[in-house]
Image 1 (cartoon, rainbow, N blue to C red):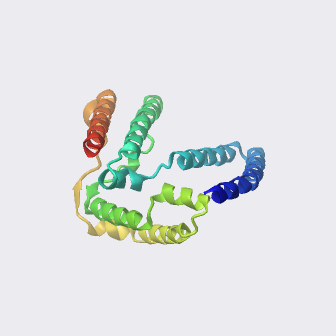
Image 2: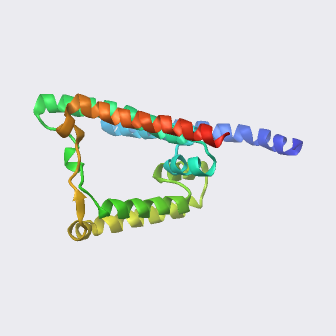
Image 3: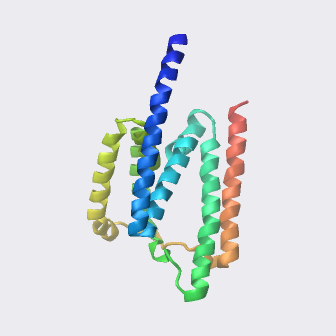
Amino acid sequence: MTEFTNNQKNKFPNQFLTGLLLFIILAIIGFMLFLTEAIIAFYWFSGIFFGYVIQRSRFCFVAAFRDPSLTGSTALARGVLITLGLSSIFFTLIKYSSFMTSGFIPGQTYIQPIGFNTITGGLLFGIGMVIAGGCASGMLMRIGEGFQIHLITLIFFFIGTLLGNTHLNWWKSHLIFLQEGVFLPDYFGWFWGLCLQLILIGLLYLFALRWEDKQQL
């Protein structure tokens, strides 16, 4: 145990210097991007920031769905629900402000019909990310930590994405749609649509808390 601790202490200076050098390189690249185009630099630093948050929080959608049944912990599941709640509020503000100024709702064209394509895609992606041991964000985070096995997952992630995009029209024309896309403000208005979504998220959050308490008894 003492030898292991000493080895860790010996590695720490090298890790710190490597991390500091990498940070300087990333900052220089970001500054060069800023001189070229500010929005690209914003994307660059935003990606670094979100990557740091994901790594420190161990945020992963697979764990959010897997942990409640395997370990009884719903911490990550509740984190996902909080993220969905906050993003719902801010995206509603963005969409509503755009709607009031221009009559155009950004992103509404991406609301797809619900059908067997949804079920098929959910099952394939769900099974795949459990076998791979992580979702897209978790996979990228672990690659950054040095888990080289996830490079294989990344390769097939790209292959699957290309295949899916290539055959997208076939899926659209051969699958039965059960329901047109649902945009809550069309049915309940902006305020009540947001309230309904937040209420559902809140109920799921309470259910997650009760589930965790029950598993720990």
